[in-house]
Length: 149
Image 1 (cartoon, helix red, strand yellow):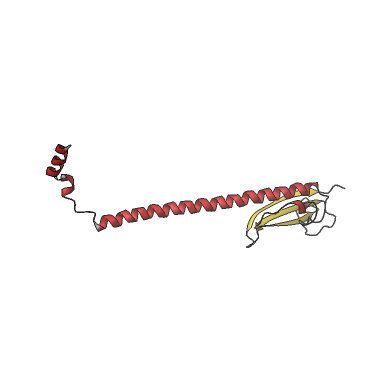
Image 2 (cartoon, helix red, strand yellow):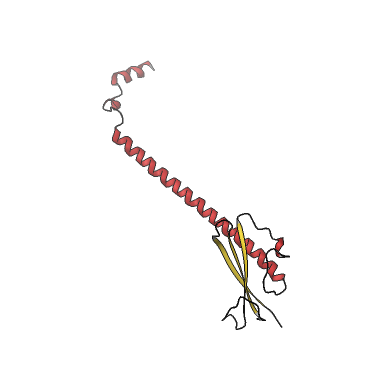
């Protein structure tokens, strides 16, 4: 063991003899590389978080619209379907979402649509889900119903 230590002293660690430390330019380049990697990582994480939020909104809105369509399917044919009257009032709207149910009517197989019911036979039910605060639309779906004589 002593021989090894003596040998290292004699050699004075030759591989370090020409080195005088890390230069300023090398340090700046290393920090710039680490900064670029950090910015790329944070950008990727932010993009992932936004995509996850958007997907979550879409899934919630789809489930909400599907629940309304299923209940409207069991309702009698009507001019409108208020979301605050039975049976539609049994659906719990998640916080941050707003639901709008509109109806349109047609007598000529969908060529012309009217907002008011005048004995028309084809009904278009449109459910729009939006954010509660800013009103940004999240999803809009429609289905058709007919009134048989």
